[in-house]
Length: 485
Ligand SMILES: Cc1cc2nc3c(=O)[nH]c(=O)nc-3n(C[C@H](O)[C@H](O)[C@H](O)COP(=O)(O)OP(=O)(O)OC[C@H]3O[C@@H](n4cnc5c(N)ncnc54)[C@H](O)[C@@H]3O)c2cc1C
Image 1 (cartoon, rainbow, N blue to C red):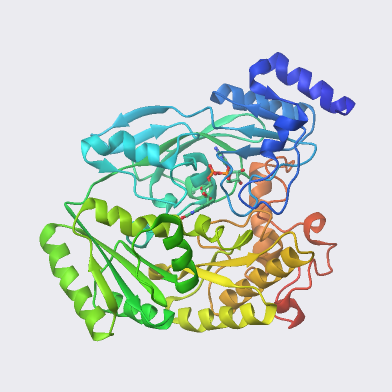
Image 2 (cartoon, rainbow, N blue to C red; image 1 turned 60 degrees about the horizontal axis):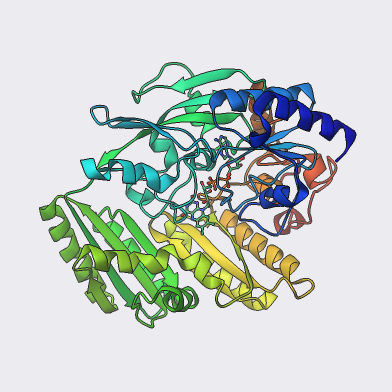
């Protein structure tokens, strides 16, 4: 440990107690990356905060010793958001896992940031309520991480993302002060600082208390699945369901590669088809019954095979099990995989999926597709073998070209996994120099010294190359279509 780091460690132990400080190399390694495992950095120190005051103390230490800090929930992020900074402190929020208040009358739950997503629903299920945003990682990911990433999930098609379900936050600012954003009501006055903070990936401060909106469980839910002989066919069914005025709560597609891996992993009884479409409908019993008929008609008209309607909660859970396990299941067919996350207008799904197929062939790496089809959020999974020299770089290149295809189709760089370190250098694909300058000014208003999660979300010369040169030889840049920052 370097001299400055030793002093920092001693000061942290004095302020927070030995049990709140991790300084041994082997233990620090636990925190060296998030779900984006290709990049790893060992932090100088990890602080296990158990209260807002702890977080404030930790942030103040960072100011005193002039080192950066990185907030961390469960570390399931897929864009390198919780990647440590080498001379900085990781502030883990996982010990702050208490549900502070369940206010059924106002339909609000107040939680600490380390509470897992699923725990919120479990806490209110007995009263007939649930928390709507449902990332597939919901058993482990934390509400703090969800807030920072504005996480989504299969049911966001109907119910919206985290930003639509958070009404208040307590935030420790990068100078150690504590502010409250929003309240229990949906309406606040002045600029929307709550909306600004949600999705800011830990670059504006640390959320230490979160007020969530809970919803009444729908009277009735129906889950259907149908096989198609092409992903295009499944995509057409999605468009037709929407055109018929049916607002499904979820519409998910898995292609053959992903389907086979998911089936091998969880034995959900999925049919062997080129593409599987999963549709979920919810609402009143009459409405669900009527919509189910309409969806079944569409399936029939489009020649779907293996149409099934779940007859019980257990069967419904089975239909979902493979979809929820799809990412991990790819680990059975490939030693490593890279999860891309891009968005395209729904009408462009077939063209972009065809382009992904071409890129897969060009680069010689298989790509599995699983996606939130209703909102055009693609998750191509690029399979590679890290033990083969150059394979990771090839996978990253392929994943990046997929992103270019999404942006060219009028889509976006991320649907739900965030920008992090992974895509910070790709931001100029979507945003002009002036757009990025405004974002940088906003960030400085919260964090003038750039201490909160530096190197994430925003492209910087240090991360991406010297200004004004290109930071990466990007396909769009080569074609003169990207602005340089
Ligand atoms: C198998 C798998 C499936 C997934 N499925 C989905 C999905 O369906 N939908 C989806 O949206 N995501 C999904 N993810 C991604 C990930 O789970 C989400 O981004 C999740 O919100 C991250 O939560 P976390 O607690 O793990 O946060 P971390 O990974 O620890 O941190 C994520 C970011 O949040 C910041 N942060 C954490 N806590 C705080 C806080 N209290 N205050 C301020 N900043 C904070 C960190 O600095 C970092 O930038 C999946 C990941 C995996 C591994």
